[in-house]
Length: 238
Ligand code: SF4
Image (cartoon, rainbow, N blue to C red):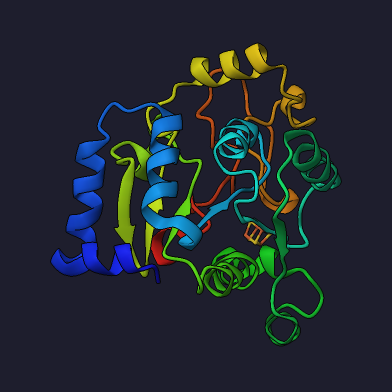
């Protein structure tokens, strides 16, 4: 943990995060990223799914810190298009430290030997393929950057720009961006979109748990369709 973070945690990390959020209320995504880089230094990583909206945050981060560690949870259940997009985008944006983090082999062998756990228990499947690998990957960091936005709805409507949950600070630079802001950024900077967006996927995760949505539906309506589950669990536990 960096010395500055240790000092500032004297009044508790949640109070520290709340202060950072208040100080950067209304700040641009670039300013929030720069503030996070200054605050957490080498203790800062970015977690990206290389999904439908990911390129905005990745491009902004590449401009502030091209060697920032970018953690991609390689669940081994991604669409082939996502894996190819992850490679293409990292190269296009000049990100030099993208890390593919895979599930633990022993945990997979014990709980999901034939790869069909998602049919029986999506919570356990996400725990093995996302939550536990992320816990391990982030163990050396103080803070991580997420791409969550308030307009996604659900548990995200009141997100602040800085928060502290579990063992880490979380930085949400795009928290106040709208669908229109994102579309405008893609158009202005000619960023290649995820190839599945044009096929009706506004939110993209693992192939077994991601479906296209109808025009006007909630952005995440196609995730774990037919289940009460709306999040993979990493934001409640890591
Ligand atoms: S999103 Fe689906 S396939 Fe991916 S880890 Fe979660 S349950 Fe498994």
